[in-house]
Length: 101
Image (cartoon, rainbow, N blue to C red; front, side, top):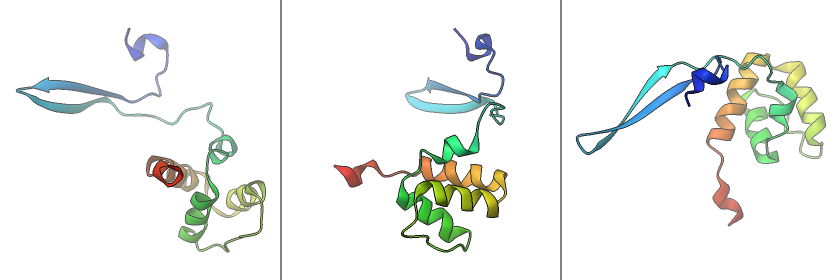
């Protein structure tokens, strides 16, 4: 079954092959924005420390005693959506799960 067969035309496709004993990755198709993605839902995945990093990167106050909902609303007001999507993806990609071991 190929991803193409599933009607998910916005998914990127990366192929992994073993060539001469080495793993080789190559991109078959670039990812496109998911038309169903909602910024608020994506932001709900963030931890407080990740919100702090995004706030600092956008030169916004820390909002240390504020809720995630409050911070989400402030970020959505002050930072363009395209930038927030990119910053959130970066935070999630770099997430350190070992801090809870």
